[in-house]
Amino acid sequence: MNIGMNHATEYCQQLAAAAAFIEQHDDFLVVSHIQPDGDAASSTYATGWILSQLGKSFTMINEGAMPSKFSYLAGSKHTFDYSEQAPNRLYQTIISVDCADFSRMGRISTLFDEQVNLLNIDHHPTNDQFGSCHLIKHDAAATVQILYDLALHMKLQPDISFGECIYTGLLTDTGGFRYSNTSSEVMKIGASMLELGVKGAEIAELVLERMTYAQIVLLQKALSTLSFGYDRKLAWLAVSLADLELTGASSDDLDGLVNYPRNVEGVEVGMLIKEKAPGVIKVSLRSSGLVDVAAVAQSLGGGGHVRASGCTIHGTLDEAIARMVEEVGDKLK
Image (cartoon, rainbow, N blue to C red; front, side, top):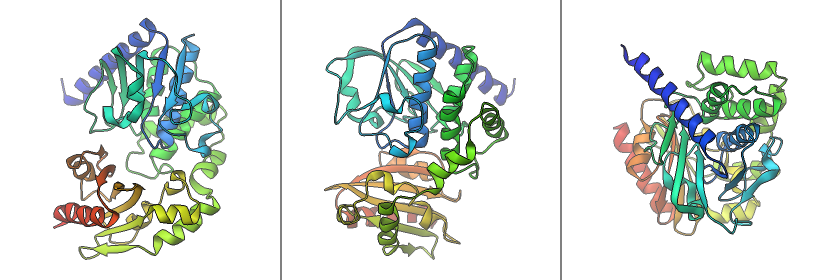
């Protein structure tokens, strides 16, 4: 039996185990990662759709608010923001989606009972298989792709609400179906969602094209910090807390900024280095493929994909820039 067949068999076994986990339990807590992106939001709502179709009770919650641009998705109005409205109870049954490691759930873990059962659904190669049940497909373009497979495995009939979640997650994690993870399978799933009535052009306009005023002002400010190193193979932008306050921008407005340094001709690695709080710096990394930025991020306590990953550095903004330039520079030498 070849490696591909082994992987397919293992994935089918994981689908069956995940389905059994959901069927055997109730009263779920559904959570994704801190600073959720399109796949995280879509995966949360898609999981909610699966549970509702099965008549299960569940609560969807995240540390911080889901990005407002995904408010058109069914389930968005029923998701709690932990910082504003945390349930006054503990949960025994958890489904985590799009989280590469346990810490990515943030403070939500304080809601877990000591006797917790956790289903870990994810597509990141750096996933460390936390939890009691795993549904992990490293070559999936997005976590929603796995949830689509799970829904079909459980004999559920996708509708347009589910379709919008799946399409949005695929669209955002493939960069508008432009990245190397855009496989024929991804395109087939996307096409089937369009057949359900999903308005792909409208979703693309909302989540990929439209910019807020604060976002464009922040971009103007961030581009003034554009710097290069290692014969212009490395480029980065820096955003301070003062920049966010001055422009009135939110964390949602940072989405996509990292692509500007990465898209410069000749650049192998682009970075966005942003001050999240005093002494806490979040770093987003994008690679053309020459450098495995997941390995760089993982060495610093982060993770992600070969071409897209992130990590957190403790220190000043200048210290974080120096550290990241050195770390990535070592890979570029």
